[in-house]
Length: 363
Ligand code: ADP
Ligand code: MG
Image (cartoon, rainbow, N blue to C red; front, top):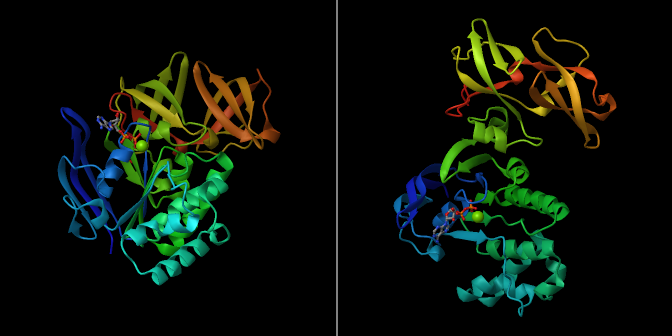
């Protein structure tokens, strides 16, 4: 069993607090991804779990044992970094075996375990080579093999794919997912890449300034972002976020920005007139013209620009001063300067309080 419990975990450097109060339970076998912009504290928290950074406060346990004062080597964790720093003068076989040799594991056992992880990671044909004779992706797999061979209770990854090109990154993402399916080792994986987070995570922990903004499955975070920060961080192209003021809140909510007035059904929303809000809708939730559903909200506007994305285009539409982008199939590509109607189901809208940033629908 290797759950990880972080209770009030804190990190400060002198008077500077980087992580004020971090609380998280990682379940056994779970794949957790720490996601957030550069500098938000992802590596710091991961390194505290690994034992590479002291904890300034709180309690950290792995597999039911408090590890606050345990050395990294006694925590049952193995870590893979962005800079995987293989030993250049050693063969791949020796690089993978290095940790076990240091632990004085008998040579025949080492050989067996190297064979096993090399097979799993497709490294058998290159075991005799030196690191410089491998591609970036192969080198990264050696770094993973080196971590795997210790049969850790917990895998910790810190942006392991950041040095690889886009194609290789996508490939390695699949490899890591496959490996986790096979080994089921509890994993904490740090990235600033939302695609990596969305595809790998059982749950994403979205961090902002050393604090948790939201914890949830990729679906929950995408569909129900708890704050403006989460809404703007997740999703490509980014969610439309239009600052507006509530001018009435009866059965329908009437919102205004500049000359543009919009009505959306009130539902369970708690808003009051005069409140400053931000309306959110994802570009992919818009449709152009066509059949109107009874529940649809319709915005009319003029196309300002069309970006070609391949099978889809991103149309930027000016709706009386409120600017929206809509992702629509290329075959329905609207013409620059034409008048269009943007349709969306009323359930597709998000509404955030402008001051607190909280999603007014919960989340
Ligand atoms: P991330 O991995 O999310 O990019 P980090 O965990 O590396 O972020 O850093 C979080 C914050 O802690 C940053 O603002 C960084 O400048 C600060 N920080 C990291 N290490 C130190 C240190 N040794 N002394 C002071 N501040 C540090
Ligand atoms: Mg980092």
